[in-house]
Length: 189
Image 1 (cartoon, rainbow, N blue to C red):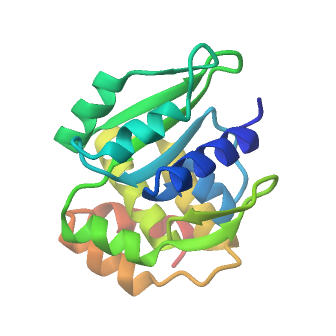
Image 2: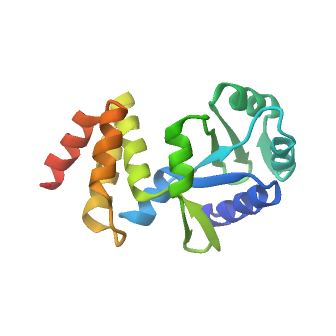
Image 3: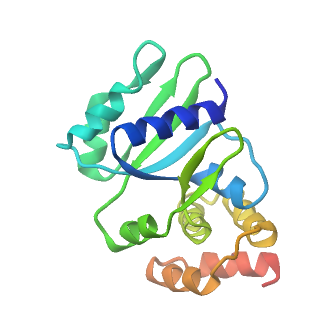
């Protein structure tokens, strides 16, 4: 199975379960910037633990082809964490991140964009600014340079307009102003 095939299966499963979502992470940053291979597909989902749609989603990933822990999914949905589904033969993984009921996650949902990914029909993709903000957050947490490279690539090569004022405002609200400034210094404003 290819990453594109797994994205297509996952998006179909989310639509079938009637779950609002958007693709983010390296898949989204590659769409807006330079392509970078990844084994993980990051998807933010809007679902609660007691929501029957969570079980409907998990049923779309049957064993033995896929591994998915219902207990991990329920715990993630209660705590606002994440759970994953793994395709056994390819070891490709979908990380489902549960959206929190906070302003930022609701804002990200309202800003998502329908886009076509290579080899996949239309998907809901995080807005480029929101991809950048999450990558700033991950950089602050772990210090991995790959996040700064992804952001710089998006700023320098994206065919989509990027609202730097939006990023600056949310970076300030989320304690990421220093990281945002580091990126601006790196790309020469």
